[in-house]
Amino acid sequence: MVAKTSLRARLLNGQTGDPALLIQLRWQGRAVLIDLGRIDRTPAPVLFPIEAVFVSHTHMDHFMGFDQLLRLFLARDTTLRLFGPPGIADCVQGKLAGYTWNLTDEYVFSVDVTEIGDDTLTHWRFAARDRFARTDLGTTARHGPVVLEDPFFRVEAAALDHKIVSMAYAVIERTHLNVRAGALEAHALRPGPWLNVLKTAVRRGAADDTAIEIAAGDRRPLGTLRDMLLDVTPGQKVAYTVDTLFSPTNAKRIIDLARDADLFYCESPFLDEDIDQATRRYHLTARQAGALARAARAQRLNVFHFSPRYEGRYGMLAAEANAEYLGQESRYGELDRGHAPLP
Ligand SMILES: [Zn+2]
Ligand SMILES: [Zn+2]
Image 1 (tube, rainbow, N blue to C red):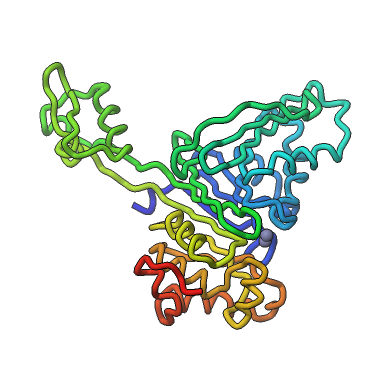
Image 2: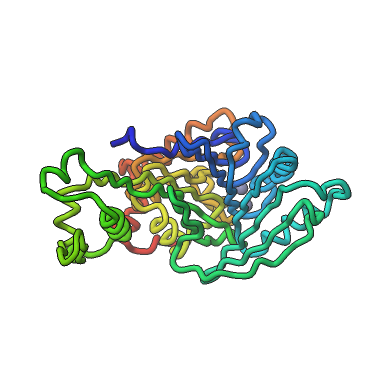
């Protein structure tokens, strides 16, 4: 089951450097990046497969890599998609305005920016051939948490409070549906377009009694066909949260987004002993990260974005997060029961 998963995630700057989580789609030569801190120490061939970047917010340590990515991609025949909170198009425009673009008319490269609102996605294009002038591509409605649908994965987002919006993300691989070898023959069924109808309905979570027409006049319930024919392997889920206050609203949004994640990357800049500092700066403590991961029933917690004040004792941050995550300590036990965290 694990072997079928195709998402491979890694922090380009480890637990202590600027946030930048590369998620490679194994076997496809494709990748997405969550957050865009400095990336100049990552070899270009590792970055070239990036198709989309999801930025949490534009504090410098999360966005200064934009220039480096732009420099790498400028002469390439490609479009880079960039998602972020409302206002990010202004930040992209501001960065692009800092350079001179008189010799790029032949370039094909463009940056397509999407601002993630509560109910709408707002799109702009900055094309090299137009000297990166900002073009309005209109808005689309946003239904639920999804901000990008791809044939192989989808991306969900949740707006968190960091005194500005800090966007949390989850990359979710699509469920693998394979027709079990020999199953059609065993049930005397003929393959046909109905198999795709069945798979699509299963992926959408349609009810078991949904009728699927497998031949003229022959309709069977989805649940029966699925159990008879399909191997269903859930896709892998990677969730990512940085720079956020530990408030009841934020905690609920993080838990909803990261629920049952295979991998949960959560910021953990401060120790519990510095909780006042963490709260003042709208950040989580390691213990809070652990509590969120436990409440979300994440399979694995990776903490990062450590404050340099703990240099020489970074291990304490991971240890504190893990103790809470594994339930050895449970200051925040009320989260598991679905209640809001205590102030
Ligand atoms: Zn920040
Ligand atoms: Zn930060």
